[in-house]
Length: 376
Ligand code: ADP
Image (cartoon, rainbow, N blue to C red; front, side, top):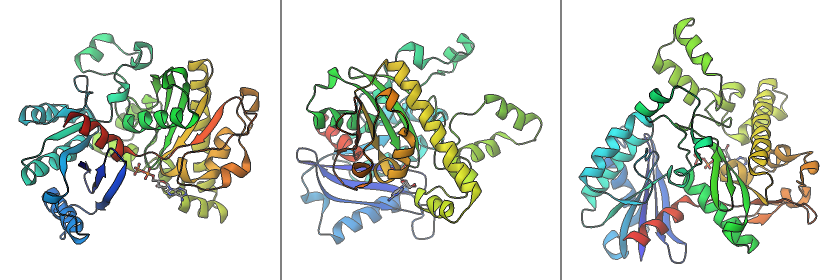
């Protein structure tokens, strides 16, 4: 039994062929530069993915595919369970597009071409917001005019939910403890970045909000800023909404401050004495520490802090600096364990540390495939 997982973005389409029962990946890859002469649209991208699979001897009709799983960023208020896709659902997802203008439209394109090319398989939408749909009202609610918020469904939805759920479950399995018995903080640090606080298996706060722009400093997004800045840019600086959107989503974060959004390149600049790169890093770490502190207070105490995604799994310096000097809060990193790389989940705190600190590789494709197999 295998599942084809598709994560369709505006300029790239990621795919994976996964056996959910064993976690085995038969293949995975990414088709980039959608919109170019070579890959003009999502239809061409998916066909290119199928060609790559065929090149590895994997033919869709003989793979034992039982479903196609689609990552959908925003499920709005209505959608959180993995949901079988039909025309009606696509219509409803289109209605949600204003909530996630960068993410939902390309996901819908991916769904439409996949349904066209693989019409006989069930297609399932798995929502990035799902894990957080029951956030307590105190953390999901923005302190703005209640009627405006209700009229426009303005609330904190949270994103990267598939990853936060998967990683927190893996952390519990690693510690051989019941999921419901643990308080956890998960730090998903990729190009996008988010933190979550999980109390006894239930998510109680997360740093991304109505859109993926809130919270931590990210590769190209600002994370938290004073909303007054947006008003100022409109009124005084004459920027229009599209300019502001582009600046905050694509030209901010560590890229906007330090000239690079990849932490390996940022590190090289820091080592060569680039002060802007150093400031970008310092702002990034400062925000991360603030969220760790906030979530410790939200939870009262935590059993586990897990780092995941591209930066969290690979950048030992970020992990060290994020949690340095917190032994008074029960957090002690072992420098040597932290510095030794591994692809497996592992502990990086000292044996005496009351809070266990882990590095847990995320695997959103496997989580999506597992959710689909349960439904197919
Ligand atoms: P996303 O899924 O959000 O695109 P990933 O979780 O794949 O992102 O993370 C990508 C980021 O991870 C890169 O932009 C880079 O900053 C960081 N990264 C990847 N590998 C390393 C590494 N070996 N050392 C430091 N940072 C890394």
